[in-house]
Every structure is written in C-alpha cells, then in structure tokens.
Image (tube, rainbow, N blue to C red):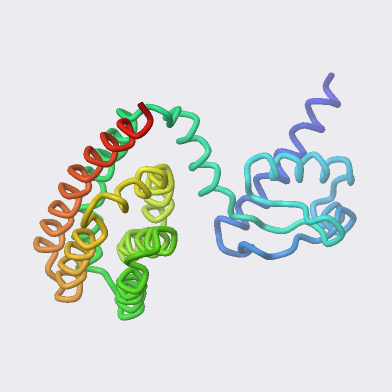
Length: 238
C-alpha cells in the first residue's frame, strides 16, 4: 500500500510541475510536450508515472493527445466551463433563458465600462470590424450572430482581464438559440446595431459611464425582444 501511495504522489507531483509551467506561460496552448521517455528522464520517474500524469492532465483539459503526433498543451477550460453551464442550466425551459439574460445584465454593463477605460487601438479595430460585419449580415442570421458574439467577447477582451472573456463567451454561447429567435423579431437586428454603435462610440471616447448606460439600454432591448421571441416561438410550437 505504501508503494501505491508513493507512486500516486509522484504522478501528482509531475502534474503540478507541468501545470505550473502552463500557468507561468513557459508552456503555451499548442506547444508539444516531450515524449514519455524524455519527460521521465526530466522528472526522474518511470514512464508509468508519466502516463498517469498525462491522463490526469487530459482529464483536466490542459493537454490533448493528437493521434500520430503526440501530446499538446490545450486550453480546454473555456469549453469545460460551457459544458458545465449547459448541465447546470438544463437549457430547455424558457425561464432559464431569461435567467441568462439577467446574468448578462449583471456582467456586461461593467464590462463595457472597464473596456472604455482599458481598450487598446487593436481592441477598437476588432470592435469596429464586428459592427461592420453585422451591418453586412443584417439579413443572414448565422453570420450576424457570429459577429454579434465577436463584438461582445471583444469588449470582454478589452477589459484586459483574462478571465472575463472566457466567462462571457460561455454565457453568450448558452443563448445561441434564443439569439436566433431574436433575430427574427421584426427590427431586432437593426435595434441591436443601434445600441452596438452607441456602445462603441462610448468605448472609443473612453467614457465609462456612457458605455455602461449604453450597454444597459442594449440589454433592456434584448430582454424585450427575448420575451417577444419566446412568445412567438411558443405560439408557433402550439
């Protein structure tokens, strides 16, 4: 039993060492790990220990094995968060959709305000491109929603806080079906674009208060359109 505990401790130590290298930026997403033999020599452990460590890293979403290529660092945290939220929400009931809209109301006004204070020229370029792409896709639901998602995630990126884009992307992902219904509400895309432009104007000016208010106004419009969309969907399904 003592040998098993020692063995377990060794592979956990290897996991922590590799995890530490990833968190420190020494290993980045897409980097390939050395093979089992090289890792075993580096850490002074057997290949069996390395296999256990790699298995644990795969389960936590930090690495992936590509058949015929090797083991690579993989940022699976965002996808894991999305899957966890999907399970938590049981996203089938309409009242869950309203709850997710409320989550956006709690998060996004402050995201917009901080984006106004911290955005870079590169952030502004991404935001402008997203709005241009939405204008070009005003009749195309899939392209419009993709650009809409990009706009909101770009605001989160502009906060310069690495956690916020992952969190917001997961929340927005859950609303994909609802956003398709909203797109089909008369004038929905045009109303959304009106608010997007006001948000961008405030962010460009570095006006945090105006960005916050513009986002609040946008999400109030989203809530109204959500209710209309869900009512229409319910009528169509009855």
